[in-house]
Amino acid sequence: MRKLICFIVLVSFGFSGHSQKSGIEIYFLQKYQNTEPKCCYCFDEKKLVFSDKPILEENDIDYFDWKKQKITLSKTGKNKISKLKIALSGIPVVMVLNNKLIYGFWFWNNFSSFGCDRVYTYPKKDFKIKFGLPSNNIFGVDPRFNPELKKYILKKFPQHYSVD
Image (cartoon, rainbow, N blue to C red; front, side, top):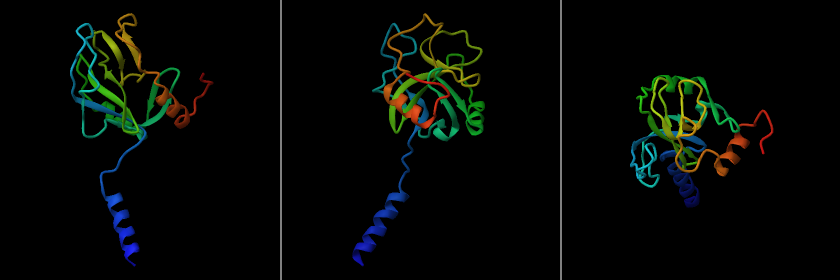
């Protein structure tokens, strides 16, 4: 009987705590620090403070095209993005996979004339994740093709073409 009670108590505590989401999530950055004087949109990934809740969760994503680096949002995802007020200088965000930071990037305003020397996307337009705006304005290594992310994407979102 004691074993049964211990088991029930352990199981109930396991389900009552904060749920650990898994899969792809995108978070706002509440605090970040630029550590590269020659890079306008770099941030130190060791000194980031994320928002408490993700902007987008995996169930907000209908499809992730790996080769084109394009996210297609579900109706709920589109609704969340439509409510965002994106400054001309962008909003810093991070992509997280199974609670692990993959890379940082920027939500960009469709009407912005600013350049971006890192990863960015126009989430209200096409959510195609790109590196450098314009394309010759880049700093550092392109982090988008992370092998861990690739493995997950190809399993979760079967691609409509062959991917090497």
